[in-house]
Image 1: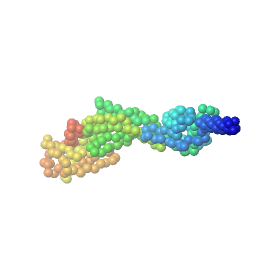
Image 2: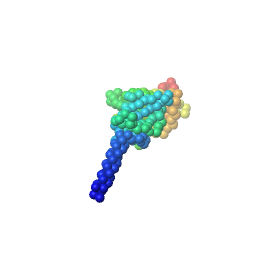
Image 3: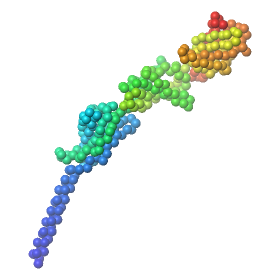
Image 4: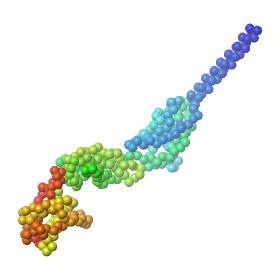
Length: 306
């Protein structure tokens, strides 16, 4: 009986060892050959840069990204990382403005053991414009910014009391005398007419104390019959001075019209209450505050226009 039991034990042990050996082979096979494809591929946008990502898998040595364009041309990019930036992909031949069908797979240490490709997604490749670099020339009283590749125009943003004002231009400078004075904070954003180039992020910020010098009136006329004084200027005003024989009068009640053809404002005021048959009539803008000042000359009525 003992001999018979020993034979049975030997047979059982042999079967167990065989099963364990087979299990080890299966386990080794599974570790070196994963039939699963990546679960998903994503396009990531952080508001500054574009990335392409696939599901990480530590059982494989690398990742392969495949891009197929509208002409069925393929671009294959292998990477040790499961996330790649657009700048890296551009170096590999991916083009901004092109539409690709994108898929990815895992690369194995052993040839032929790569995973299957994931499902394809469509990707319209776009990017962000570079941010302009903003500079301030205090001597010239002007802002300037760097030209941005693929930008068609720029917007300069600045604060005016509780509002944010924007000024659009295709130039690369802004004369600060064209805006109201005050403590201002400026930044610039670049824009493109091509949808594949999204607007840039804000430039660096410049904080500037803007001193705006009001311009002299270009012309003044006076109708002696109606006693209407007409004043021509390039800037809209809330108040100004009228001078009668050297005496100054602050004018806050008047009519104003903007003439597009001449790019001028015409201020009209009835001065019958202060006019005394004098031929010496003049006017000038008034300083508003420490930021908007007038230090120019008085403009007088041309006697030939009375």
